[in-house]
Structure formats: C-alpha cells, structure tokens
Image 1 (cartoon, rainbow, N blue to C red):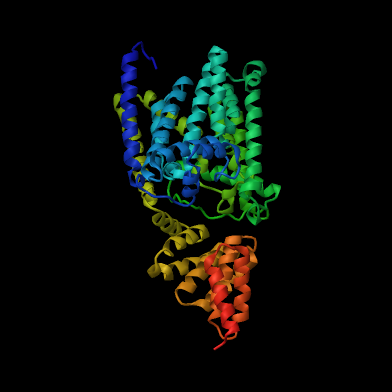
Image 2 (image 1 turned 180 degrees about the horizontal axis):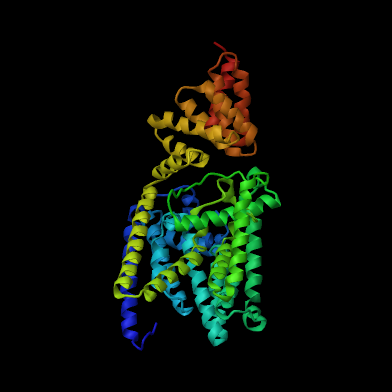
Length: 539
C-alpha cells in the first residue's frame, strides 16, 4: 500500500479508515447482535451431540451429519460451539468480523488491480442493506466465511500472475479449496479471474491465463456437481417447485439477474422470503428480462474498444450468480427463486465499478468545490446505507419479529406463516393466533403436512378435537413415511376416538399403529392399554 512515496501516511490512512469501517458495521448491525436463532439456525449451529472429536470426524465424513455438506463451514461452527455453546452473541460477532474482513479484502483486491475508489467500494459493500441477510442470519456464516477465502484466493492468485511463484500458486489453490469446502457458489472464481485478466489486458492467453487455472476449473466442476447431487438426493431439491422447462429456466435466469441488480441500486422492501414467481414461457412480458440482458451484453461488447469494464462487470455479476439462476435446483427454490443472501458474492461486481465511477467524478471535478461536493455525496451515500442497514437489522432482533415483518411485506409467504405459527403455539394463550397462521399456510399450500399437523395439535389442545381429526388424517395421507408425525397423529386420533361414542375399536386401531411405529412411546402404550380395558369392561 505504497503511494506517492509515503508508505507511512498510506498505512496510517488505511488503518483509520479500517477502524471507522469496523465501527460503522458494528453500529449498523447492533440491533441484530442479540437476535436469537431464526429458521434453520439451530440446524447449522453444531448440536451438542457433535461437539466432540468424533463429531468433527462425522462433519467431514458423513453427508447426513449436518444441514449441508460444507465441512469447513461446519468445522467453524464446531469450534464456535466448543467456545460458547448456544450463546448467539458469539456467532453474530464472528459474522460481523468476517463481513468486515471481506470488505477489507475488497479494498486490497481493488488496490491490487489498480481500481480507483477502493475504500468507497469497501464501505458500500460493508454497509449495503442487501447484505443484512447474510450477516445477521447465523446460518449464512457460509456466505461471510466463504467470501473471505474467495477473496484471499483471488488476491493471492493475482500475486502469482505477477510473480509466477509455485508457493504463491499453491497458497492461492489452498484458499480456493477452503472456499469450496465452505460454500460451492465460490466455484465461479476461476472464470472470474479470466474475465479480470481479459479486462486488464484485452485478451486471454492460453498458456499464461488458462493453463494454470485448469485445475481450478476441474475442482470447481467437481464441487459444483457434488453439491448439486447432494441438494437433489440428500436435501430434497425436487418436487413441483422445481419442474421448469428449459425455456422457463432461461426466462427465470434473466429475471433473477435483473432483480438482484435492481435491489443493489434501489434497496427498498427487502424481505426475508420473497414471493414465489410463476415463471411461464407463455407470458410475453417475461421475455423482456432475458432479452434485455442479451441486448445489453451485445451493446457492452460493441463498446469494448472504448471500455471493457461494463462487459467485464456484467459477466462477473451474472457468472457469480450462475449457481442460483435456476439452471441448477437448490432447495431454497421451494420457498422462492430469489433471496438477498444469494447475491452476497456477486454484488462486488456492481459495487466496485460504482465506487470507481464515484472516484472518477471526484478526480475530474473542475474545482475544489466540485471535488468537495462529490466527497460529501459519497459520505451521504455511505451514511444512508448505514441507516438502511440498521433499519433492516431490526428485523433480526428475534424470529417472531422477522416473520411478522416478512408476512407484512409478503402476505403469501406460507413459510413465514408456518414458522410464526410454531412460535405462537408455544404459549396456550397465543394458540388461537397460531391457528390462524396455520390456516393461512394451508390456504396457500394445501399439501403442507407439518402445517396440517401443527394446526391439528393446536385445535386439539384448544378444545376442538373434531376439527383436529381432519388434519391428523391429512398428515397420514401426505406423509405416511414420516414416523414421528404419523405416530403422533395416530396417538392423538386414538385419544380423540376414545372420547367419542362407539369409537373404541377405531381408537384401538390408531393406538396400535402408534405403538407399532414408536414402540418406546409409553404414552401410546398406556392409552392402548386403557382403550383395551374399556372394551373388555364396558360400563
């Protein structure tokens, strides 16, 4: 970081800017620091049974030990679990430090590539509200940690490109492997490096540029294919939500890229769970997104003799989003095709050019007053983003707040209705409201077996057993292979039947099935014994 022959001054400036950046990040994310677990956090944070050396071995060698097979991510969670257990503050602080590290590395990467406005890019990235989901949501440590490794790999490889050192190459490959083992969306890095080299030099040389990256492409392809297989066969990325034809997937891809670009430029109405789009090749306006992107790419290609930056930015942005464009099925598509955390990495490709343009405006201002005005404008932009991030972080104070805000902005979010209903069900006095949310789930998604079950339990506990019967029976139709739900449904159906005239034989049938499914369930065995005694000794 030596400029104008004064390394001490530059180092001091960078230090103070770094401290300011960290302070602003902590302040902006302060509402979420004590926020508890939301959605699948408890499935990502290492459970107590795995917080051992044998558990660490399972994390690496068992596909079913953790929520997703990202062994380096879950090794980090394992270490954090050993350090502070289930205390959420530690996890939030780690995510904030990782986010700060990623923003700082963006500054270093820009300086390595001699891109102006490096610190502007770092501040915009760090404080952009579209990243709140990645930083405030504990599960998304996969984003913050993987991006740190991704950027370390990129910076180290650029150093290798200049020095051609075997040790530097090996270090870069190590960081890239770490990124893949944390989240395989980072598999796009070798393609991104080639685009950067084309942007810098105007051409791609096979021996200099492509050859050294071939092992990276092979590693990326292996990681991507393996993750796609796990998503489909282990996690369950299949069903009607994933039944899209080739044209629908192409239309979806164009719409996704445009959506993410717009949220970066105009980050309002950010939602934890966006509406699930109806993608159809028979709807003419849906072709506008993909068609517009094709046209824009053609224009940028034509303008490449003037500047290669616009095309490079578009290619990196779209390429970094490729894993979530719809060509590969990922489990979250069950809820929505879009999510703010999907563009955490890709957003750099837009933020850096915007920062460079702001820096260019400042340098080309004709007067000192003009340059001062640009500086104030940049400071105002950073302050506005920090305020928006602070406001967005309020959603993550607790799970109930998150789901209520989500429902307010997306009333058709059956996921938010279901999760809020489960929270409300923990208190008897709030069960009537929980029932309303479960009913909303079933209006939006009638085949949701767990919502049928939760609704039935709440109806049973609030004195509506006959209403509960219908939903328990639906559970047995929709998920007969789910042993826990089926056993509990049979148990409660048996208990309800025991209190209905002439239904003792039906009660015995349900209770026998409950015992068969869960022989260790003492409550089911006791209820079955009582039902048989009442049949044997009618009063």
